[in-house]
Length: 155
Image (cartoon, rainbow, N blue to C red):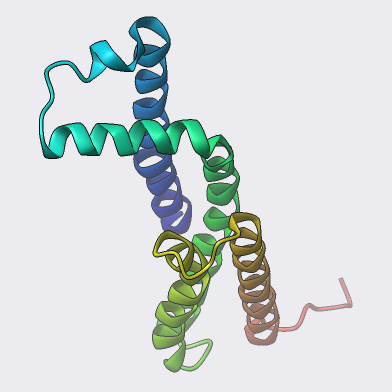
């Protein structure tokens, strides 16, 4: 439940908040245009608003992919929570505490690299993230299978 709560809260707060901001900004631009929107701004505020408007106009696919990306990341949080639970229960090695942090960082790395400009293709970054999440989920599945008691076949 922690993984679902953590991933769900991130989805609502990060993606939901950003989408609401972008919808309001789009509505304001469509209703009044950018001139009225920026009339009372100066300096850094004007620059920030111009940057936000340009990002909204030039990269609409980012806002659609944000929801899809969250659908990929929520299962990661569930899998990592399972791994932590198994480590706490001593069903797997305690080293998995450290590995969960490393796996989380690994799965976030493509998004970070895209944001700082080291990766220019958003779809490639999301694809690498999805592949990393799938790899973590497979590892957790097999670790869980290995630590479960065998089923009684006589029943």
